[in-house]
Length: 275
Image 1 (cartoon, rainbow, N blue to C red):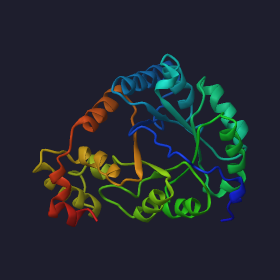
Image 2: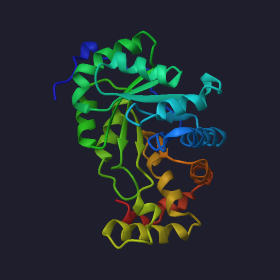
Image 3: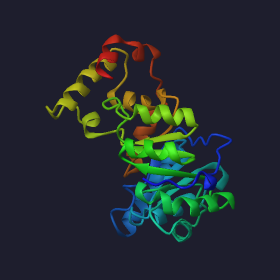
Image 4: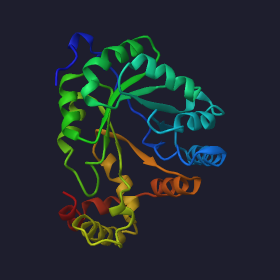
């Protein structure tokens, strides 16, 4: 991939550190209509009341941007961070997202890694002009992100999957990000294998059950351990949690607040299963 010239790159002098946990709005765009609007706003309100101050969205999530904005416009703007995504024509895309949200956007992710070469210079101008605070790239392929981090001065990356209790394949990316002071945000942590570990016999789910058995010795549930695990790597600053209801995000936030005993991570049985 051809990379933007380093002459165009914004040099990161202070590491960008979003809040440790955030609400991903991928499930807030449905169902349509007033009932869906009310449910989405209630979900965001519950997240805020639970202490979450990082909210991620995208134009691709239907009316999620509008619903997120409706909920957050009632909150003091300096208390939370909002991120959204662009593919092409970054300046117009950001402008449209701001209009839908009714809020300024702090962080913008390039959603198509192949578009970084053309989109980055526009986003860099917006960052230098103070329109946005940070630039990132989002992908479910850690190798693509690793290639971009080598060549482009980013503030952050959003990695969907590939660094969790069940999959640490993205560790080389995280190590590179740590060396280059690029914050890593991870999503896709509460997978079906984690949430429904008793209901399947595929290899990943069988391993999840074995991990769960170790966690139970320490009074820790499998989802609780899964949410706590990623930030054990120093590059990972944030975990995004997708939720579709107030009850769901309250339950997830309660898991986040529960401490995980340090001895769990030192357990040799867990070490054999998580590698």
